[in-house]
Length: 211
Image 1 (spheres, rainbow, N blue to C red):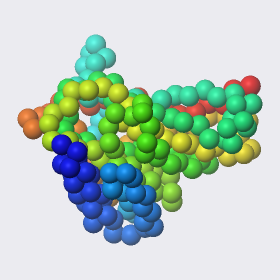
Image 2 (image 1 turned 135 degrees about the vertical axis):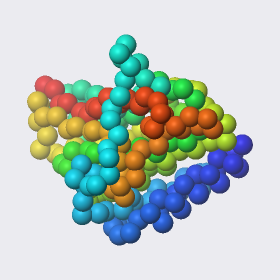
Image 3 (image 1 turned 45 degrees about the vertical axis):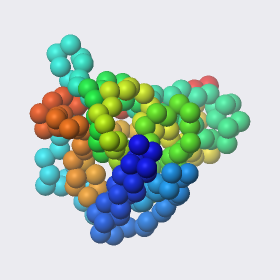
């Protein structure tokens, strides 16, 4: 199983690289030989491209087959300074009908920098995260051999805020269903494609600085 996951993640990383027509590439090896390859930087952002952007959907009772939550973090100015302006933010899969493959992304505030933390005991999915610093955007990929119905953290991001951040400032992180390469997000397993046929929902998050 470990060999399969390592091979699959390497394959996913290669796919991200082949999809990149331009832009700066950055790689970071993990113990499983996975890598983070910068997503392609294109002139046209997803909201102005020709692709039909998938909707943020939920059932009338507020549930979804798949639901992703980007953490909303409040941090005091004193704690921010103590931690060198770095704030951990988790992205969580909190409703899961049994995925075996996923791709998704997010925009982050242009005043910030973002790095994935590849080794964190609270992250249960071995997600490849590729950050595009020019577009302030990241795209991810994850795969496994068998359908996985677990819920939990998809990725941990260390977000560095600007040193002029002050109480009352907010720094948004917003889910994107479309990549810089105009690829829609993917949530599926061996029998289901929830983007096409089911319900995929998400909640945006970010960081708020308090007194």
